[in-house]
Image 1 (cartoon, helix red, strand yellow):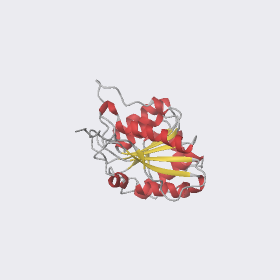
Image 2 (cartoon, helix red, strand yellow; image 1 turned 120 degrees about the vertical axis):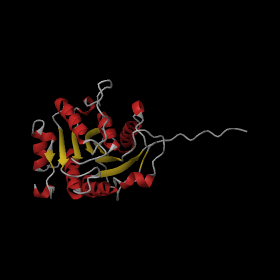
Image 3 (cartoon, one colour; image 1 turned 30 degrees about the vertical axis):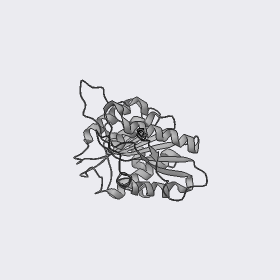
Image 4 (cartoon, one colour; image 1 turned 180 degrees about the horizontal axis):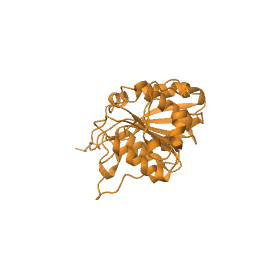
Length: 252
């Protein structure tokens, strides 16, 4: 009796949020969280839950500019050490954007382990910007190489982290941002004081900041004064920029 071949798992792009524009001029790839080690396939519904609200907001904000927003569905939930599966899937997704839409700028927007995937895959030639929300990063070990940052040269990079995050260490994202800033001045980081991993206490402000950054990075819209100041300020000021209560681009 012949054995059935095991289906090969493939990453895929989820359906675009909202009605698509007539002509595509920029793409956001949403990278959900994941696990440090896991071979399990993510649940499509659970995977999109953490990024759905952000995806809808960005799609609405950029529709007139020609923005398309997709969630990346990973092959498996785990980063899995040197396999770096989630980063590989993020890079595949950027390739898929080029295949579908041509030469358009891409912003990688990741949460948790998806934030690490976005930062690692940020060197893809189609990517012009990375937004990492509460990124999971490995503990720094003298016996292991540091998380790379040189691939981020030439990209606009924003990291957002809650100071009370009990799942992903905000100090590690600060250290990575400090190293990245030495190679690339277009790096900044905002701290959401007293907020946790889900950044839910200041959700409206975080969504407004994300919209402000993404629309500026992809379409050249003028960003708010706090974002301009964060990019311009030397470390550590521009890497510990507080996200103000009530932040809204229209008010800054």
